[in-house]
Image 1: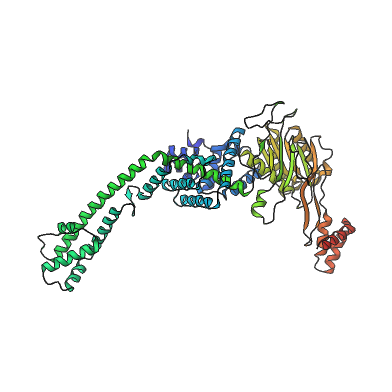
Image 2: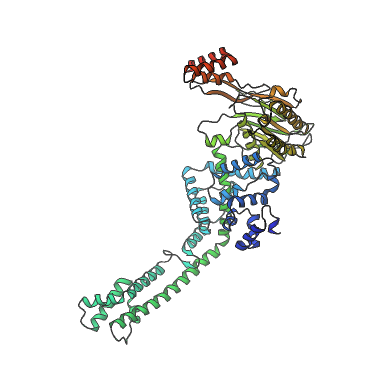
Length: 608
């Protein structure tokens, strides 16, 4: 395969990769999703990530039909990356894409949830030991030595189920010996501390080299110590060598010349011979020790290779497991379009069916991950459902979602959580289709071919309207399953036309047998809706003692929500800075209902 056949690899990128990696290695890096190798070769990390997403999951990326869907996808990946235990695991998470087959989704869920359960069962001290091992693994750039150390830490922690089972059957003693050998070797060199005799010889050689560099000073020191003749000089030099270098007396005697012309020749000749002899001894000893260490590694090669592979794979699943634990994520159920009477699958799930095919997205107590990650206040969970779902048991304070409507028009108060609900549904569907647990007590998802997510964009011109319609209508008109999540479509055109166009989008969504939620303030203008569509509402309930808006974020099904501007006006009246400003807001209060404004203020004060 030619490099240019990969998405995003043009002539310049090909030249860079071939020059730095060679064609075959570049292809292996792309096929294996190796971000680091491509970025080390000179590609920007973001560009390398985009190339690998398309190379390893191009069909899945096509599911993300709009720019906002792609943005939501990237936001989720970054939240997961925050829990990565190594940089390599972070890179692998960044190139995760939606999957196109239920079996692949289920398999990844199996691995991640098994890792979550195994990790959750560990004692805090064992978790810390594993994380510290992975920190060292990262610091050493994922070397064999770091991988073996991490595998030993996992074995010591007693993790032996799910993806961690990959190290459970490795021989601990063999790995420990390999770890010692790897710690001792630096390429073909033997590190200090690996062998006592080699360290002794190296120390002696270093001392002799220092003496040789300062031979004249040494001669003067010996003479100044009162040496009177050649015999005394020889003895004093010999004593100095034995005391400072840990060289054997026999080696010293063998090194001393018998025909030296003077003290300088005698000392210099002795030290040069000692340097040569010790260098040879060091090299010989190092070769012998290295050979033994390499033999140990050769005997442990299979275990080392398995440890390297397992540690990387475990880091990936462990990172996703920590993400799932951090947000209390659970396994979603997949609802497929199947013919009536479909049999139970291998996991005991039987897809429900309808006359026109089953499709559903439903969540019970779902949490928005973006709010959970970045906001200090607690997240109010929401229960919601579309299509032929199976949500029959919900918290007592919440009504059960209606049965079969595939499309909902969501209305209600400003700052009432309508956009957050869309984002939450988008997050649940994206995570499920990537084979990851979702932030809900229970969830049902029909994997879709097109996810159309459109955030509110306050740009009011014909160009924005045209580009928006061109981004959301074609996926809906194509073959396959589509989920529409559209926020305040009316923000991009005048209200009258917006109502007509939005009604057309709802009707098209119903006609195409798609699922959809449309957030709008124009619900009254959309009547009559098709039978397969309903209206849901979110309601503001008043002001708290700090005059902040109180909102019940849980939608009420089959009910038009209200923006309740009287609560906002009430707050403005209460917070007016002077009498004239207050009078102006009181005039607005009369327009929205002065009695309601006064009652709201009274309720807020009474609560306080």
